[in-house]
Length: 260
Image (cartoon, rainbow, N blue to C red; front, side, top):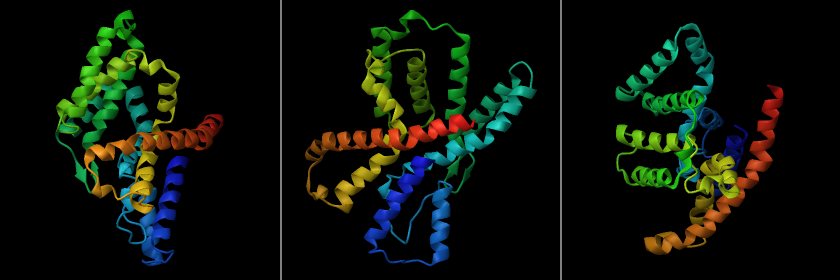
């Protein structure tokens, strides 16, 4: 949440500087716009149509994350009160039904709960099984690499087959597969720690580079030329994300653990 608030502050600065610090909506409208951002439904700010573009629209997942947090007491109660793992079976069944027959309200869809269910199942399985030595073999790494390629090229994002492919890659990695040793490197571990910052802030870097400051007219370039801008921008995103992880995320995580 602290990093999300930081990103909203950056978005606000960009929006109001683009509007020459003039209020283009009523105070009540502006309040409601910020309220929507506060509950992870985004939208425009101060009638600035590119508001969601600044953050690349990635805030859409956060409402599902917070629904999960808020329902944890209920989930724990169901698992605790129903004997012989029936609570877990019930929750997984509900996630599958919600995926096959999704409930859609505005920008909300229940189909994404299946991802929490899969994560819960895998987490439980890892407490029950002994991880085999071959889990980190080069052969399984090759298998995982092919699954990753399948995830990237499969055209129907987050349908049943795509979710299955993602789940296989996720589970093989959780079993201890290091992807030819890559996931054990210090750089990969640091990127993993800063992954939320990367996710939330990369859109801001892209927007500032190509739209706000408009250092180059990106529309005038071919895609192959556009790719040449990616290495320096990637380095910029990583440096920013590691910085925000160490100075925003990590201190508040430590504070939260201390309070708990």
